[in-house]
Length: 77
Image 1 (cartoon, one colour):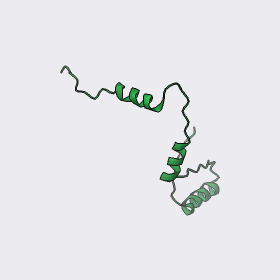
Image 2: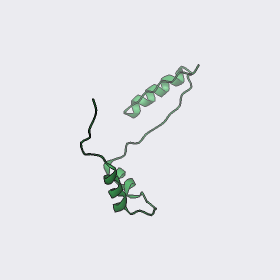
Image 3: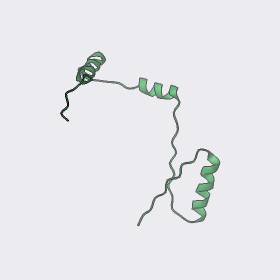
Image 4: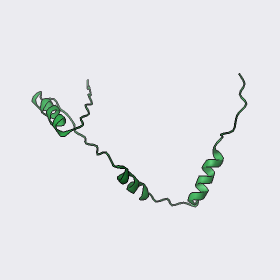
C-alpha cells in the first residue's frame, strides 16, 4: 500500500532538513519546486496569449455578456 505525505516548506533550510530526514530514514521521496510568479510576470504571460478564431475579442466579450442571466427570475417555492 502506498501512502503519500505532502509537506510544503517556505524556505530552503526547512526543505533541506525534511529531505535529509527522508534520506536518513531510507524513505523514497519525490521533490517538486513551484516558483511563485510576481504580478509583473503573470501579466507578461497573459500578454503572450494569442487567440486565433473567427470572432474578435469584442465579439467574444459581447457573447459572454449576452449569455449572462443577471435579471430576476421567477422561482416556485
